[in-house]
Length: 293
Image (cartoon, rainbow, N blue to C red; front, side):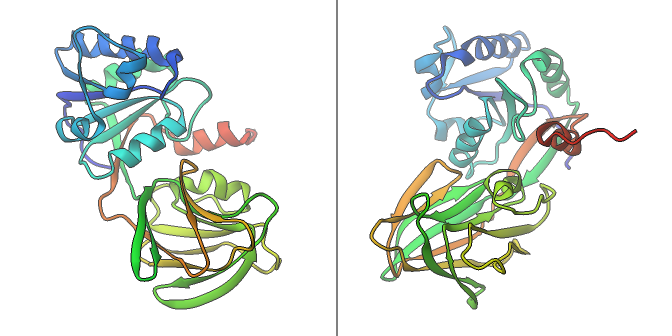
């Protein structure tokens, strides 16, 4: 956690092509304007939610000029925003439109109180790492992307893929499974969890490798340091193409012989939470853990 500071220039990002976020985006813009703060409206958001008098900006410009970006939507919207702003020193705050999110932890009912407190300096800041994925074919990088949750190598549902994993250049195992999830602690509550991976505290400096429906029952999740370089080498993908997908949103086809290099991105993501943020409380609510009396 770091010491709070005032935000003077704030970016506003709504859920992509979802007019249901318009009311909340307008409300937040009004609150910021009342405080005399400079507000930039994300260009793609302005196409769905135009706000008279607000300057619009492309995502890269928003990242360069703003100190804070308020993301209105769900965890999917937040993941998209995090990837696009990953190279900028900008803090992100998530406002959830529906159910409680792991990343968007301010509900629509609490917007006024939470936002006012945060703008008054009552908040906590958390740093989390992202993954940098590079696909190498014939010695050349053919694709690069980042992920806040996970990098997944996979095939069509019900189809197995053969690949090997290496950690810091050292051979680990040859796998036959539906795929492999390489997850950050942030992503440990997402796809990795549903595939049998462990819950990891979000600021933990570690990465987990989780096989998807492995052929061998002895093939279990493996946790390594975030400083490790993870390599996945495609051996056989059968007749249909395999893919590498970042955060379930950015997909690229891979073929036999391709190497997927995955490591922690050097620049960390800055997350802003309300001062009373409770990660374990979110786990209890999302996972249905009962209270013990």
